[in-house]
Image (cartoon, rainbow, N blue to C red):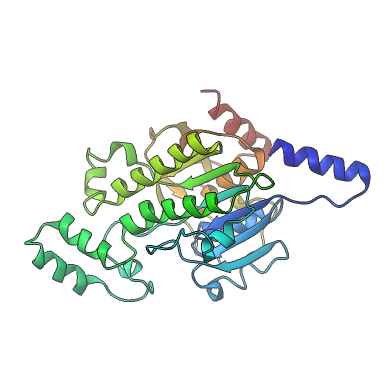
Length: 314
């Protein structure tokens, strides 16, 4: 990010137009991902990677945003030369905002609209009521289960990103939207949330990101929100900060802590603004932190920057 800023300054001094860095947002049709893509388009050329571009075509209708359809699930999702690798080629930053529900819902279906309860009950009977065995059977069917999305999907993104990297376009930063409770998943109440393995899958995805950073030379940031609320977000006009998208001004105070150490709820707009700021500022590298909303007003830009930079010093 510092190199990009120096390049921009040099371009201004030479009278040439600055070339904005490329950031790829995977899962850009979700309620958080589309806000991250929108916000980052202020400072980056954004590749918004989605399954169905028609879902967010009007919301992400900006000159700096390119909508690209690609899958993150499936055995060949991360293969060199595939749609995902082409979408990530040349992106110095990748933000992963993918995810699925903790328990079987329509979100687990490949279309995102089909009821999966019959398939789950059938698998449960076949597994003699062993829930984890039944979930594994749904994994094998290629459904959008936590294992396929939060673990294997993230690994596919990492493989595709590596395949598309080059000396001219090195990998610099990977930001992963994860969850509170991943490192505390064996204790109550997170053990209940983890009944179908969602926190196990997120932990495996996190591990892949961290190992890839150590071996591949990129910085990573893992952002842990609490239970998400706020939205839906249909209006893509905002006044320089996503904090102003939500009308619930009484709970827009922001609390940070390193690691997996807070509990609480998180506004989707707050989460997206924080993710975007970590990318723009190049802060919170090689660490994970929790973000929750509390009573109060949203922090000013200068305060938010100072608090994010402080995370790296704690």
